Length: 238
Image (cartoon, rainbow, N blue to C red; front, side, top):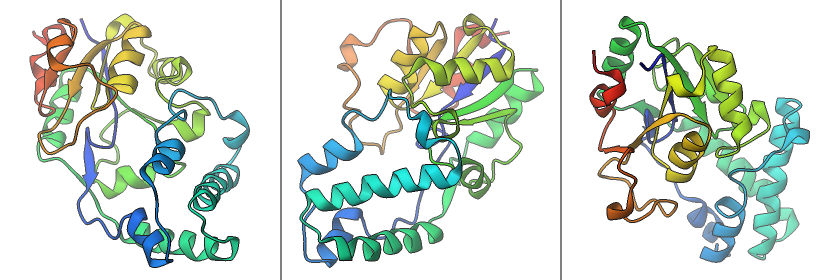
């Protein structure tokens, strides 16, 4: 019997609905381009699953690390050093006005699980301000435990972030269900840690490049389009 459900946050519980200019567009504003290989190298390749203890000492340390990564990416695009601060400030301004909205079914599903005595957690590859993002989505207080990779110093699918979240819940892996939208971080990682999984892939999302072909999905992984599938998981059936 499942005693706790752990949720990824972005694209699982909520998403940004009022996007401003993309990073590609902001770099074009400076007169340069963001090649696909540079974007992949700095933001997709090699960061998930890593540890970054030294950057998770404090919010200041973490923000400095984020900015150093941005500066390195801009350097690979040929953007001169004296324009880096302009770009970072534009990103900050745009982010400050972004709104994060919970999906329509989320509040009801979380409330129902809580009424049944199931412990809830958010376990997310996020920055230092995950609580603020959750508040923006109107989900403050909706779960019992909140864990950001920024605070733990390890990004999913590193096993330490799952172990930390389960420890905070006081739940064994076999009694937990992990729900998320990214195969490597929200299915492979939790399965390796001993948890059950539900793979949520909403219809408007693009291809998950970390996932196997649909016909190769393991039979014991529940694959669904929204959070209501959590109720259908066999381990939660009364």
